[in-house]
Image (cartoon, rainbow, N blue to C red; front, side, top):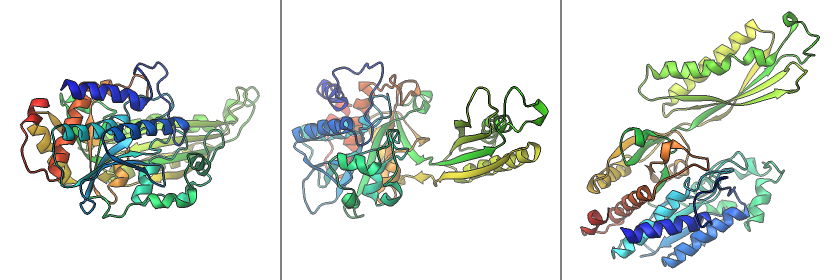
Length: 426
């Protein structure tokens, strides 16, 4: 246990490009930046030391494969190394680290898999730079529409195409990252939970059933801007005052629905833009952004209908016009039940307390599941804090996750002998 613990501690630092994890301002490795590339180089170095075959595809995803037979199927695991602005050092990194750690553990125990094992380090999972998430896994899965993305810019006006080409890639050949259904047999991702369900249930591992993809709405309100000091209160068309009741309405409706249904829904008014946004001008236009998530797609659409009806009521009662634009409406993704069953068996064998749960956050696995049998494991993160410098997962929990992946891979790749060392090392 000590050897693996030390290995995880050292390589957690290496993947984060630091000498210690306590960073007040967190980590910033945005999509297709030199910082992400430096982390990818650390991944390649670790993989090379494990004797793995290394290459990068056309989207910048890094592949490290334990090749045992070129004619055998390939089982894949992995996650990402990019972060949000000032994020933590575990979101994504945990999945890459434990995937590599699982291969080390298999090698140390002299396991002889009958299938190839690939660890994928996906490029550009976070939407922090471009507002577009999971670019690398979309490319692998064949669902990346590069024509819609080509001219999307970051805060500095740099397009996705420009950043990818500065990354040493070709925009023209990014499609070549796509893998055929036969290239992989299955995919498993480990991630920190980014919530507290595991902690709240006194569990150690979360086995994810489904990923709650969002409906995202943009509510556009038009009133009339006018002088704050000279316009009488009874002659105003204040867009902000008119739409403000929608904010508690969204919260109240989500709470009300959760009292009547088993699968929960969450909804957030998460962005507000006022125009002209001046101290002495009545707000003439307002945009609200609403994020709605549940694995129950009917529930998401029911709440959307309630929001639309409430906005129509506001229009009738207030001197404003309201339009609603649906920015995203993705069906939730349910993961492979056979993999879930195998993971439950593994956690039981390792005497780890696991729960079946859903994910409220999106991950690369939701794209991989469009083409391959896929699963998702969660390990706890302290107090559910993520996308923040205080994000933290213990080495002990990383250790447990590594063991679960390794035992899953041992079974999945056809190693047919029992090894008592697993229980001794867990």
